[in-house]
Length: 231
Ligand code: DC
Image 1 (cartoon, rainbow, N blue to C red):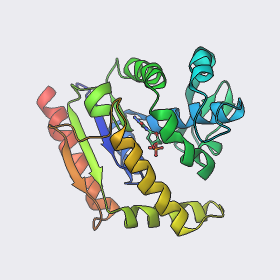
Image 2: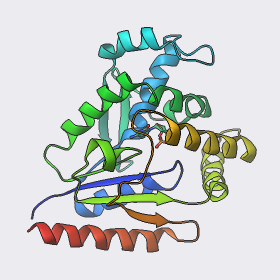
Image 3: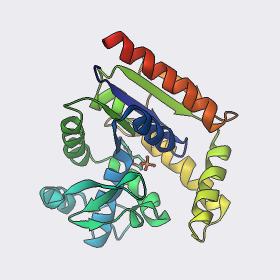
C-alpha cells in the first residue's frame, strides 16, 4: 500500500499530538513531534546561558546550532518515541513551563527554523509519517497528501493543558497556563518567518466541543480516503 504524509498544524494545546500519535499507531506510520524539537533547542539555550534575559542571545545560539543533535528514540513501554538532546533524554524537561514560556522566541529565529525544517524534511523522505507542528502543511511539506488544521477556544485549551500538568504533579495555576497559551498563539501567528497560518488546502477541525473518539474517526477516515486515492 502506498504511504502518504500527514501534516497536522494548529494552535498550542489543541490535542494535535494525541491525535497524531493515535493515527500513526493505527496506520503503522512514524510520528514526529516538531514542537519537541523547538523545545529541545530552547532547553539547550537555557542550559548554555543563552536565554538569561528577556531576549535570546541569538548570535551565540546560531553559532552553536551545529553542536545540537536531536533524536527521537522509541520507548516500547510508553508506545511512543522520547526526545533526546545531545544523547540525554529530555522528554520531561522540555514540557516544563520554563521551556513553554521561552520556546516561541526561539522558534521565531530563522536560522533555528532552517536547521529543524531541513531535519524534518529528511524524516519524511520515505513518507509514512504523521508530523505535527505549526508550519508542516505550509513550509515543511507543502505537498503533503493530507493536511489538518486544529483549533479550539483558548479557555478550553488552557483547561486541558492545566489538567495535564496537574496530573504530572506540576505546580501551576490555570491563569498562568491561559496566559502562556494566548501569548504563544500571538507570537507563533505573528512572527515573520513561517507564521502559524492555515494552509489553503488544509481541513480545519475545531474541537472545542468534540470528543477524542469523534475527532479521531473523522481524521482517520480522511487519511484512509487519501491512502486509497494513492493506490
Ligand atoms: O507543539 P508545541 O506546543 O510543543 O510547540 C512548542 C513551540 O514551538 C510553539 O509555541 C511554537 C513552536 N513550533 C513552531 O514554531 N513550529 C513547529 N513546527 C512546531 C512548534
